[in-house]
Amino acid sequence: MDKIILITTPLYYVNADPHIGHAYTQVAADTLARYWRQRGREVHLLTGTDEHGEKILRAARQINKDVKEFVDEGAEKFKKLWEKLNINYDQFIRTTDKIHIDTVNKVLYTLYEKGLIYKGDYSGLYCVPCETFFTPSQAEENLCPDCGRELESLSQESYFFKLSAFKDKLLRHIEENPDFIMPGSRKNEIKGFLAGELKDLSISRLDVEWGIKLPFDSRHTVYVWVDALLNYISAPGYLNEQQCFRDLWPADMQLLGKDIIKFHAVIWPAMLMALNLPLPGTVFAHGWWTSEGKKMSKSLGNVVDPAQAADEWGVDALRYYLLRQVTFGQDGDFSKSRFKERYDTELANELGNLLSRVLSMIEKYRPNASSVSPEGLDLTVEAALGNLDKLYRKADFSAILDIIWDLIKKANSYVEQSKPWILAKEDPGKLGCVLANLFRVLRAVGWLIYPFMPSASGQVFEQLGISPACVDDIKWNKEISFNSINKGEPLFPKK
Image (cartoon, rainbow, N blue to C red; front, top):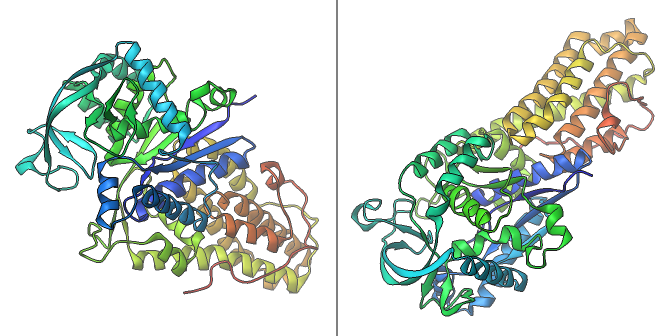
């Protein structure tokens, strides 16, 4: 039996509202999960929220709210957005969940007993918003190199994880597993980082009220990144070594933003090695979004609210734009004019109009669908289906959508070349063949767009009068009938 496919997102901080970057990660993860379910595989999509740490406590206190109430409300904001964006996740883990806290305790006690955690002293610079340490050489003018905020000086007793002990093993794993870190630019970044000195990791803080206490020294609170990373095994059931954990782990694809790649491609795999657990198949770090060519900021008023964008353009259109506009892994720009252009040209005209005009001609001419002469369209459909598994394993959404849109454009060209409105008068037999070919293309397109635009896919099949269960149902030679078509409203009405 095939292993259950485990796809994860990072845990999202609850001290701020969800933004377009969160939506981007989540839509990508959901698209992958939907595809593999479509292919008959069992999938587990894991997501959740990161709720511990000094910055969470500070944010709650700034508005005079109890911290537990604050994180509860924050988690609900993400759940509501995922529901709105049609995200079909299987598990939502919170770092305040008991199973997670107990797992963190078990893991850290295990590493402590193995001699991989020791007590020492830490002195350095710390960014509270980023939850990250920096050396003086990394920070200019005492400012965080990632977010630009002022760093705080810390000098205190701490416990350390022997991260340095895993340097050679990490490098070897990266070399032996070409798809472990994707895209290639992020892999090169990590290899460059590991080429230097890899220092042991400070994993605890004194005088932090909100967090998980070390199981062997309750004066210390677990560093939030160590806490958060362990969700990937706490959620699947590592605590009790349940069968479900063995069925799920290792993760097949772990999606995250490029700003947290070092945590996921250095610290996280080292911790797994220390626990003698297998490493994820792929850690994929996508790029950042700007807005109208500028970095998003509240002061500029250009922060993109994914809920508002979904209300304005529709959920499927937003999902499409996010994965169509930029190659996954690169930075992208959220442009309203570009969004409108893609919506009008690709969704409304090319996809929506194709469905509408084909069904209108079938309703008008009532041709016979029995004759078969695919005229090359069958080869285009079969080629599209044949390339998908490889591209989805690489999260190459742009290439997948290119394939789908190539098929849509060929179908539109086929309409213009074959001229069904003339065939209706001069060659009714040929007309039936042409419209049958176009019906089969639409059937394939409906299946192909499902992971990206599940609602639009459902509308395509509803209007075609069919409900395919698997890829075999849309193979070219599968019989068709025009008797159940139900032409409805346009898929993507012009804005």
